[in-house]
Amino acid sequence: MAVVTFYEKPGCKGNLRQKTLLAAAGHTVQAKSLKNEAWTADRLLQFVGSLPVADWFNRAAPAVKAGEIVPESLAAEAALKLLLENPLLIRRPLMEVGEERMVGFDPAAVDAWLGLNGVELPAGNIEACVHGPEGHGSCGSHDHDEEEHAGCGTH
Image (cartoon, rainbow, N blue to C red; front, side, top):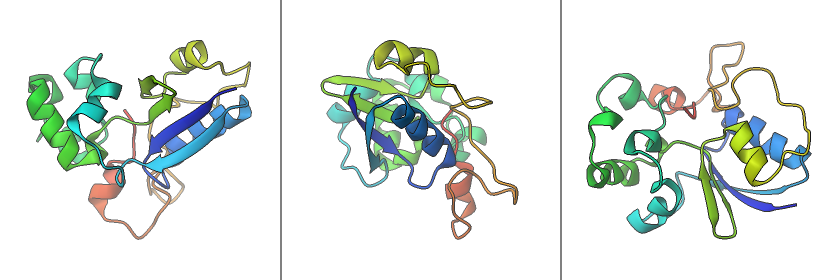
């Protein structure tokens, strides 16, 4: 089984579901805050560099949802600048095992990479924002601002 470094938005219920799935499959998950990590362009590119620029972004981030940031229209340099300035714009989770990295949580890709060992997937989109009964997002907090809440989703 693998030791997975899992960069997340702390309190995000979507990320919690993903970590729970990895743990149920027998992996050790070491969670780290995406917001608190000291990202550099080179380090972030180790995760996202093989993907199209548009796939680097958290589609649920407020600026993306509002059309203020259009990932498809950005060059890599401009996109990196935005992501480094505001890590909540980064598609998550970012996962790392040794020298191998992955962005987002596509169960088939995670299974091929690490093995989910037959663990049953939860209902719904494992990458989607999970909203609680009171309309709060997957951030797991009632004392956050709307910008933080609206960026709960991973994709």
